[in-house]
Amino acid sequence: MSGTPEERSEATHGVVLARGDEETAEVGGDLAAGLEPGDVVLLTGEVGAGKSTLIRAAMRKLGVEGAVPSPTFTIGRLYEGAGQSAPVAHLDLYRLGGLDDEDPGLLSEYFGPDRITFIEWSEGRGEELAAGATRIFRVSVEHVDESSRRIRVEPPG
Ligand SMILES: Nc1ncnc2c1ncn2[C@@H]1O[C@H](COP(=O)(O)OP(=O)(O)OP(=O)(O)O)[C@@H](O)[C@H]1O
Ligand SMILES: [Mg+2]
Image (cartoon, rainbow, N blue to C red; front, side, top):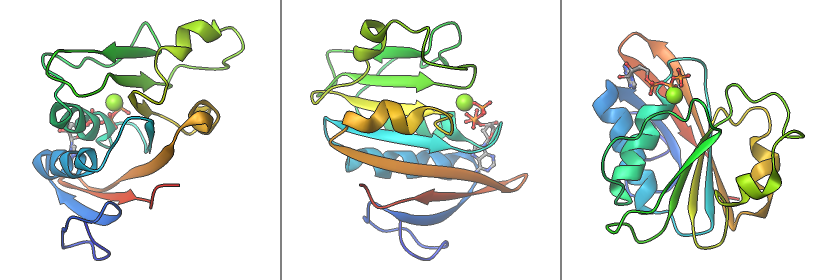
């Protein structure tokens, strides 16, 4: 990814115009290549933007095999396959109102210095959940039109 929408490079941040879901997946793969245990990736963007597409590709790059269903009845899913260098968590906060009713122990399995965490729909409580991360990557996915999206990856902080 690079500073100009049309180009891509090895940079870990920038803005990309992704034409089709394959290119959204490519951004996910590029992002994953720069991730390390302790990192949290926060994804924002409206319904159907392409957040899951990007996350799935990133998770594949990190060695996650098999299906990656959206966490619907739970907030998150943890993947610890043998082919992974680190456990990978995928959280979806879409239906999450408050965290107050959540058992803190239940959420803690998704975070830690030895794991990599993706948080979809991070607009609400994502920042709060990511507070203990080594680095936080913020990614936004916007509709441009039916066949393209603008994907912005902020420098990690
Ligand atoms: N760059 C792109 N251009 C066109 N379509 C895309 C692009 N990226 C992803 N899509 C498509 O957009 C649709 C929605 O993708 P996806 O499920 O990843 O979105 P999402 O942001 O996770 O949605 P939700 O908010 O429902 O969780 C899919 O059909 C996917 O193939
Ligand atoms: Mg999704």
